[in-house]
Image (cartoon, rainbow, N blue to C red; front, side, top):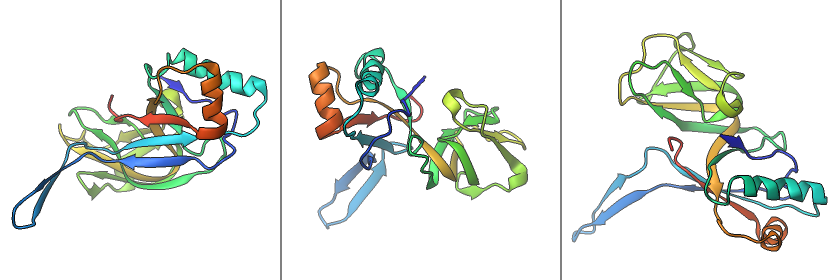
Length: 196
C-alpha cells in the first residue's frame, strides 16, 4: 500500500476528525440504548499548504493521480512530515484470527507501548515491537507467548507517528481544483477502517 508523501510539509496545522459509528435507540421513558457498529474509529484528515514550489505541488498531484482519485487506499502517518510524535491511548491494532502472533501496529517509530488483549495489559515479557519490519514502515507487534484466541481484540497505547488508513475524499478534480484545495480549502483525506 502506498504512503502519503512527507515532502512537502503541510504549512498549517492538520485537522484530524475522529468518527465513530454508534446506533442510538431512544425509548419512551427518555432512556437510550447505544451500540457501537465499528470496532475501531476512523480518522478524516484535512491538510493545507502555502506557496509550494511547482515541483512539490506536482508531487501531490501525481500521488492523487496514481491513486486514481478516491479509488486506492493509502497510509498517512500523522506528524511524520513535521517530525512531531503523538501519544495515543487504546488504539485498535487487530481482532485476532487465532493462531497468529504477529500484527501490524497502527503507528511507526513508536515507543512507550502498553499492549492490551481484551482490555488486559500484557507484561513487557509477553510481547515485542519491531519498529523496522512492517509494511509501509508500520511497526509490528509480536506476541511472544501463546497466540491470542480468535476474536480477541488487541489495542495499543504508544507515542509515535499514528498510521491512518485513508483515501482521497474527492474522486474527480481538475488540476486547478486540486491546487485550490491545497492552498485555500484544504485537501481532505477520508479515513478507512484499519482492516479494509
